[in-house]
Every structure is written in structure tokens, then in C-alpha cells.
Length: 269
Length: 310
Image (tube, rainbow over all chains, first blue to last red):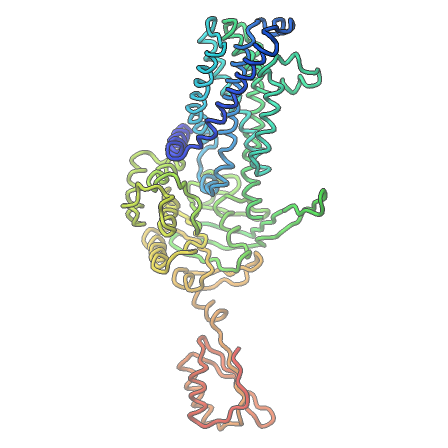
């Protein structure tokens, strides 16, 4: 499995160096920067730095700008991870290499592991750029519990990866990347607490936020950065994230294998 | 040995009926097909487009599962033991797909070697040998997107041999290739079977290619096996049977004997019938012998009433 992961990592890195779609990279950063700028100007000039009292009650902090900048950065990170991993097989299909890949006895887990590790390089760079930009617009890292934050960040990658397996099989099923991924990203942005706490959502929408790995990942990461909380303080969010990861992994692994077979059948049928 | 036993493949496709309605359509691509492929043998699979050749090859290479029947490779079942079979087989398709265009030829082979679980020394050795065999040593470190069609096809062959497969499935491998490159490929295929004992299943549109390479040929039509024989016999019985029907005034037995003698030289057969004082000659042959027959007729000043070639 690890030799396949390593080979896929090398293959993707070479392809990226030769022809990386920089528009994706810039697009993800710009989208997060817009979120930061919008929040900054709205907070300072539209709302004159006045927050709803419920905000502090829900988040345990009055630092709205750090809240939003972290939301934008982690959201961008989630989108990049989901996008790069879930598009892997459909890209093989479009470039005519899927058959050659499926002919080999290699494990698909190794293939996806290679894809996710390679894309972490790029998404980490995007994340760092957004965080550095955020520092100029009110991001406060003074209280950050770095170790816990790093562990939560790693667990979040695992969660997004598992969700990407399911998204990837949906893409293969419908042979579509644009509508499937963007629908999910819009829903994620709205219900996962990217720019406001999920408690503001109508009651009927809250369950939707609970099935997104981004929700517990974001909540735990903010707790570690804004309030300096430890992992133990965030056990419920971590359990929630791990449980979602497990469920997505199980459904995603089965469905992606089924979709691979279906795609091959459809091509020739 | 590869055993294909009573294999059928039915595709179910959705057909749109109006805006919201759709209907499932069943297409029987392969129907009760059986054959065996032994080490060192080259077996040809011949048929028109949509005959079921590619589907058969995809099932043998485990990409597709048969709807019914059984495929066995060295005693392994193609559905239950697909992962183990994948290590024993490989497929080479015509065209320019199945390669990563942004990688160089060598990088492509290195990647596929990893997917087949080859270690570093095996990979180096195998890549060196394959690049030499397909004459791509000089272009090994050039990205595939800069390769010509023939070079891509040769790299495809190297990719298909990277795991040193016992069974090779060639799906129209010379499609779109220049004549000299196609000839070189045919020689290479022959060498793999004769010298390395590879079992090769080849699909092709070209009878000449099949005749040159294959020990046995299967002809399939609408998924069904309609003929299974040596290429020579098939060529004789199906592909090169010329019929010439000549109606002349009644001729003497002496001239008929001379005509029979002449036809023997061209491996032709004569069938004769008399009607209304005329002789109707039906001449069957492997090659078109209209010219020698006309020469014969003019040599003996026979008056021709009607002549048709079929």
C-alpha cells in the first residue's frame, strides 16, 4: 500500500510541477481572502464592532475576526482536500488512464493516500497564506494551543479525506465534478459554522451541519486557537469527527469500488 | 491456461424516453462464448465493430465481470481472485490512451511498476529492457505529450509488459500505426509468444494481421462464436472464396478437361451444368482468376453468353 502511495505522491508532484492548475490555488486563496475582507469591513463599518450577545454565549469568545478568519482558512483547506481527492478517479477517467490503473492489482487505499499526502503540500501552503493574510486583519494567535491545534488539524484532514471518498464516488456516478462539488461546498459554507455559529441556524438545518466533518473540526480548532483549549477539552468534537470519518470511510470505500465497476460497465455498455 | 467457459455479458443501459421517463435496455454483447488460450499461443479474435471483441478482452483482464459463465486464469477465478489475476495479465489497447502525458516515458513505466509491486532493482532492469525492446531509449526522459503517435503506442506496449505478464491481451494494437511500425509490432508480438511463451489474445480488424500472427482464430458476430479454425482454413473458407459464373455454348469434354487442369493450378474448382444447349460453369477459387479464365475462353474461341463475378 505504501509503495503505491509513494509512487502516486511522486507522480502527482511531477505533474504538478509541470502543469499545476494555479487557477485552483489562487481561487481557493481569493475565496478565503474575500471572506476575511467581507467579515472585516462588515464588522468594523456595518456593525460598528457590535456583536449579538448570543455570539459570546455560543462561541465562548468575543473575537469575531479571529473566529471568521479561522473559519475561512479551514473551510478553504476542506474544499481543497475534498476537491483534489474526490476528483482523482474522475480525472483518470477523463484523461484515459483509469483502465490502466484498474488493470493493476494495486490497492485503492494506497492510491488515495498518495493523492491526499501530495495535496496536503498545496493545501498547507494555501492555509499558511490565508493565515498570514489574516494576521493583518485581526487574526489573534496569542492564546493558541499549538500542539492540540496541530492534532485537530491532522484529524480534520482524515475527516475531509473520508468525505472525499464518498464525494468521489458521486462524481464518478454522475460523471460530473462541477455541480456535485459546488453544491456540497455551498452547503458546507452555510451550515458548518464558517462565518457564524451553527446555533443561529434554524432547528431543522442543524442536523445537516452535524453530518459535515467540517463542523466539529472547525469548532475544536477554534477552541484550541482562540481559547487555548487542550484535546481533552474537545473530546466531544473529536469523537464526533472520528465517528463521521469512520462512517464516511466505510460508505466511501464501498461506493467508490462499486462506482469504478459501474463506470467501466457504462463506458462499454 | 486461460479458460473462457460459456461466458455471456449483458449490458444494461438507461435510455431516455421523454423528459422524465427512462427505460432500461439490455444489450447482449457476448453470448455463450467458450475458448482456451495456452502458453505460447496467439489466438485471434476477429469481428466487426460491436461484435464483442473488446468486451471479451475486458472480461479476461478482470475489468468487467461476466454476467454468466466462468473465466479461469491458471486455475484462478476471474471474479473471486481478480487481484491475483491482475498480476498475471495485462492489456494493450490501440490508440494513445492509458498513459500519463505529463510524465516522461520512464516515469510512466516507473509508476506502473510500483502499482504492480515491483521492487527497485526489478523496476530498473525491466524498464531498461522494455525501453530497449520498443526502441524508446533516447526518448525515455521526454514527456509523453511530446511523443508521436507511434512512440505513444510503443510506450503503451512497454506499459503492458511492465509486470512481465503471462497472458497479454492486445486490443487492436496496430490501430492507426504506420505500416513499418505496425510490422515491427507484429514481429515483436510473434517473438513474445514463440521465445518467451506468452499467451496472447489479439483482436483486430485486419485479416492480414491475424493470418500473419495467429495460431487459431475465433470469429464472433453479435457476441456469438461463428467460426473457430486456423487462419489458413478460415481465409480459404470465408474470406477469399471467389465465384465466377460463366455461361457459354456447349463445349467438348476435351476443352473441359483442359479447363479443369488450368483451374487446378489456381486451386479452383469447377461445377458444371447444362441447360437449353448451353453450359453454365461455376468456378470457385481462393483468388480472383477472372483473367486466366477469360484468356482460356479466348484461346479456344468459345462464345460467351454471360459472365458474372460474385
